[in-house]
Length: 113
Length: 116
Image (tube, rainbow over all chains, first blue to last red; front, top):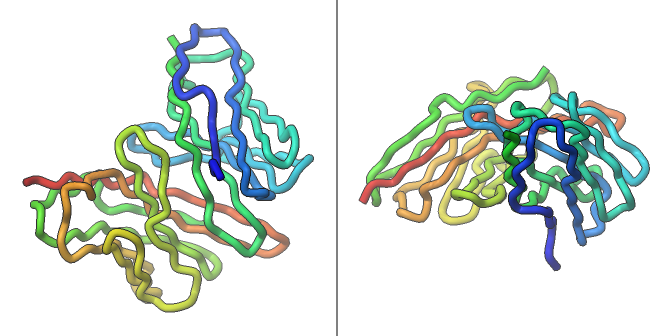
């Protein structure tokens, strides 16, 4: 049981390049989340997916798109990366509606030059 | 609207002395409150959670937190700090406001350093 996995672990991009961050969970959880973590800001929600086939914006969605490919996988796409998107990105998942605990992946460290 | 305030961005203690990390919240509904820990270059790990049961919650690694509704606080404590406790700690409030509306808000984090 790997829990929540994220790829890649590290990435360096140039301004304007695109990339997709991958997230998968093997806990059969319904809800999945993407956060970014910046120094002194805590974690901020980018997008979430309450169930397969649905996605919703969080606090900071601009510049990002997401795809809930199936129940296991939730990807985050940067179409045209900007230096302001340099951050650590965490994916999380949650089980049923009455279970509040979120389980986090190890994070992807992204640097945009 | 809900919010979380971690009152100290950095706390420094000596090994063997008590730890206190402070968290205040505001919430329109009956909240659930969590503490997560993040060790350097690692993901987030759940330390403990309060979900309207006992107000004193015990977590992993000897940590505990007390929910005080009158003070809107959920401070994290540990009687005796260990070097391995050095990490960043996040207080989190979760609201479910009907219709499966679920909102999670993180505090900005408190960095705990433990001196030998």
